[in-house]
Image 1 (cartoon, rainbow, N blue to C red):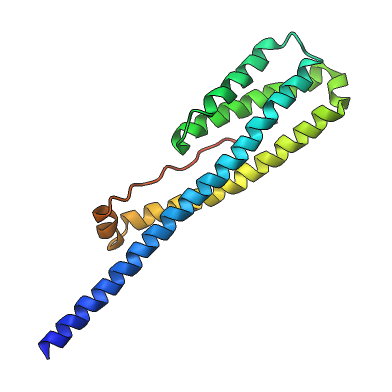
Image 2 (image 1 turned 90 degrees about the vertical axis):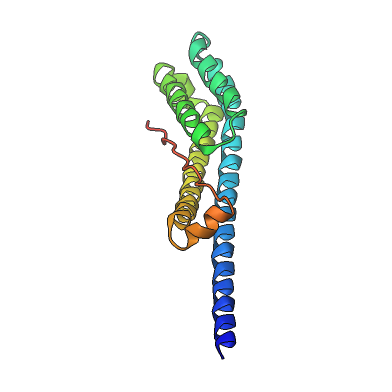
Length: 175
């Protein structure tokens, strides 16, 4: 009789361990998928920046330092892989974009340029998509990190060397 009780306890603990492990895997995969979504949106944004710079250059050719800053920031972004590295650089790119948008005050004809306005709208749409993707990713990271820190999940998380994921901190463009 004791053997059956012992086997039942071992089986229950095994099933519970499998459930915990599968939840860790699920949360880890959600954070990876969330980061992938952010990368897609950032790539879309990075692809629009040279077009925006070209549209503005036609009107503000002597604003070269602003163009160089945004181009250099965009170039550095391609070499970064983690959310902790990417967030501050993307915030810098946002500030550079604000500088470019501010040029339209000095150049009224730029305000009327349809390609500039369309690119500005597209970048704004991408910014919204980045924020949605960031919220999803940070929620997935929060769930994973909570699971890694919670008992009894932390026992399996440590056994299988799960690491905390970094949040993606990113400042929205303030115009």
